[in-house]
Amino acid sequence: MTIEPLPDVLIEPVVRAALAEDLGRAGDITSAACIDADARLSARFASRRFGVAAGAACVRLSLLALDPSATFEIVVGDGEMLQAGTVIAHVEANARALLAAERTALNLMGRLSGIATLTRAYVDAVAGTGAVITDTRKTTPGLRALEKYAVRCGGGVNHRFGLDDAILIKDNHVAAAGGVGAAIRRAKAAAGHLVKVEAEVDGLDQLEEALAERPDVIMLDNFSLDDLRAAVARAKGRVVLEASGGVSLETVRAIAETGVDVISVGALTHSAPVLDIGLDAD
Image 1 (cartoon, rainbow, N blue to C red):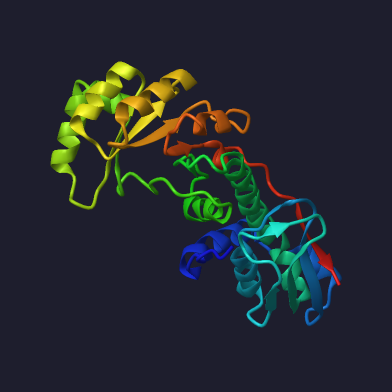
Image 2: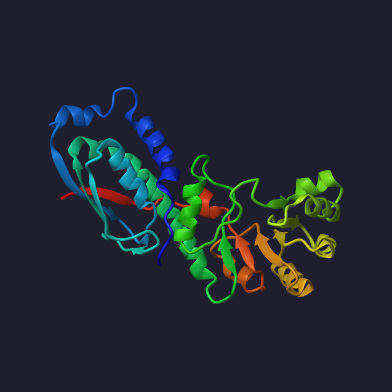
């Protein structure tokens, strides 16, 4: 599985902020006390359990920030499957620099690989239904670009990245605008020709009002399975239907089988467990 990598310029600020947080006011005083300044160390990053790789660039940039002469060889690329013991990358660097960068590198790669792994589980659960799995904006502040990249590594697709790249009318917008129909009309009048309009509805009556205004996407919020099936039948393919709310690995297959087009899952980014990855000296 080939994943288009993120540009380094998007990753470097995150890596440098994390390194600065960990180095604190005096740097890695343990390595400075125990290891010669010019010592070199070869090591490997390896998975401790089954999962999906993501975030190799975070490891590379963490090392290069502290040792520009470090070398880094990727063995398993982002988006590829890992087994317990799988070597992800070989590295060689100044020993002090490598050990100072270790935790930042592992924190970021473990976080992103955990998201990719959970996403793959959801994608596999709906295989053959035609539904796609997407993320939400429930991301870790400052890590959105990286976490959404990890979703892609797991086979999911991205929802909007922020408030400015699509119009998504939620329940509070509807309340403030005086109804879902009124909100959609105002949104379509304001949107540029490249901006899509999505409206959230919380029942079949509201669905009919939304369908009459023909938004690009309708989000079916916390619908029962029966109501999801009814919504698909009423929409008749006129708009993209997105199911949201109450989605878990136990329920996602049944939701997909109702015929909805997209299933958004906040848990991909807000509840993914970290994948256990370690650094082992050769």
